[in-house]
Amino acid sequence: MRIGAITRDAVLRAIAEYDELGRTEFLAKYGFKESLSYVLVHEGGWYDSKAIVGVAHKWDHGRALLPAEFSGGKDHAAAWLRRVGFKVKAVRNPDWVRDEIILACHLVMANGWRGLDANDQRVIELSALLQLMPIHAQADRNEKFRNPNGVARKTFDLATRHPDYQGKPTNGGALDVEVLNDFLARPDEMNEVAQLIREGVTAGDLQSLPPDDEDELDDYGAPEGRLLMRRHRSRERNKGLRKKKIAAVLRQGRRLSCEACGFDFEEVYGERGDGYIECHHVVPLHEAGEGQTKLSDLALICANCHRMIHRRAPWPTPKELRAVIEARRASRNRIPAQQHSDEAVW
Image 1 (tube, one colour):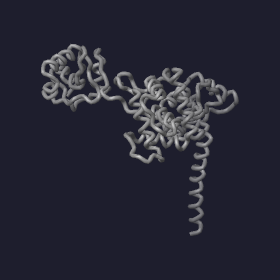
Image 2 (tube, one colour):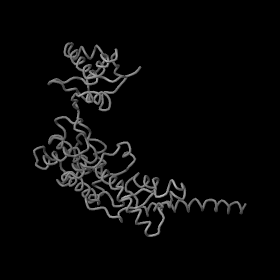
Image 3 (cartoon, one colour):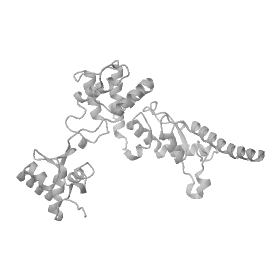
Image 4 (cartoon, helix red, strand yellow):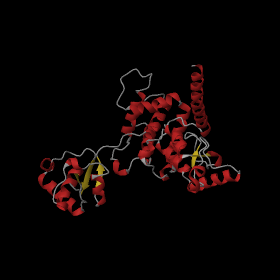
């Protein structure tokens, strides 16, 4: 069955029925459960957003939507309500992401791998910083988003998972352990990462970066987190820098071929591939601060090699990836030769 768009008037009629019947009877009548992610806020009242949307559909299209026909999340019910001018509020705060945990773990490390209380000035300061980070949309946050109590709990989640901790760990997840292990294995590098994130958020530089597609970022292995990755990607996509890099290579009489595998787009695709190649920013994320990008920081590389570099940390340089490719090629060439030698013996 088709799902049509809902109007503001239909939502107001659904709200009126909700108020008339009461929450329990309204949800039971239409088969909905209490909202777990978002609620509709209207004239001081809170309403189960998914149920309201489902019933609003009845007034616009003659039938209420069934709960299984759509989602109550930010891309369905919440988005539809916002589209017609209503305020939608998150019930739960979003999970902590790597960037946030890096800052919390950095604080725990500085405190001798001990958790901190909510009234500690360092926790209060970190709480304010986390609320500035351009990761979670305002609509996905509630009034307790990354408040000092929540930040303090996260520091204990991390501290109680340190290998030297003898007691029972508090709540936490696999990502907490991953970040903790990164700090234990590479403390200097992760300290630099935390400082870069902190400086970028404080100065406002990381807030101005264009957002990346989250599904696309899933293909990139970067323990430094998504904000520094966004900055890295923004530099690689800088059309002006890319043109200057290409011009510099051509002035030197070199071909526009991949610095890792040697692929030449024009040689393979003719006129369609003329002048095309991607740029890779070779400076590691934990070292790439706000300084101006130099042409020597960029390498020309094909799309396949670019993906392979970014796929898993630590990222190889184009030179290191070239060594892997050449070793693989040499290995493949040796196998037929060995087979031919064996056949000669027989």
